Image (cartoon, rainbow, N blue to C red):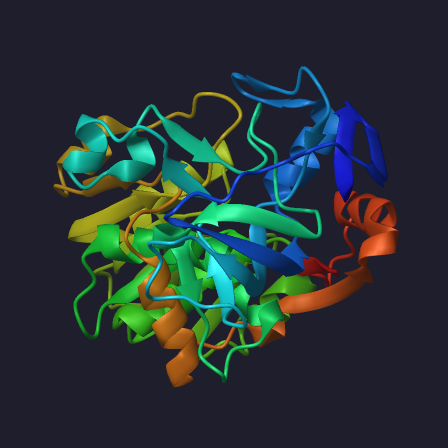
Length: 343
């Protein structure tokens, strides 16, 4: 079948690719309809690696997907041909202790689409475990369904923060994950969210996503704005989504005593962290690696209308234009957030 293949660093093709996947009794075969382009896909395209994950042979990209079930395994009861679905791209192949402890995202046997050497989903069809395939409500489009994967990161972060109704949050970084985290924090009960960035167009969009106050860090200091708005107390939770080391002093100054810091972004290098500044406030620090146990909740929130991701879908490309889509995503204009490819 035709697929979007990363041949090597900075060489991407759309070509016939030999891949066969056998349908097991607990699997479904899905015709892919929409795939979102993630920052990790772009990073593999531009650099050929992310940390220890190195592309050593041609690999199909893509892991944010929605589609239609076209075949089910003999033991699948909750899905049928014709169902519109989204797929959780990572699952433990041989569940071990981490999975049994409820942390399957940390299982060493995890298989995650478009993470070397596992092929991704930018192709006409895939075979996927039914237990990690979720039916979309009639009110949720394929385009929205393909946003469940990045939204799951934000929802996992919100769960880690243990948000209480009425909490106030700060999100650093108004990229796709930061914006989705702001939506997830509000859905979890936050009464207000502050969000920082240096791109005015991203901040303008953020201001339209509910009770959100954008802060342009080029024009005003974060800590002063936060402390002034909260009567000197600070925010209940901070979601660091930028992966930028320069934000940490402002984060620790902005979080309230007994508050929570959730580390979502992945810095390229070690970052400075003032342990004493965190200790004197007893700041609880949580970490996020992908997500677990949140896909169904994300789908439910979308279906109920309580969480709207449509404003973040800014650019759409045909499957035939996939290489151009990746070049676009590699130098995305300021007003763009999420580019998707339709099959």
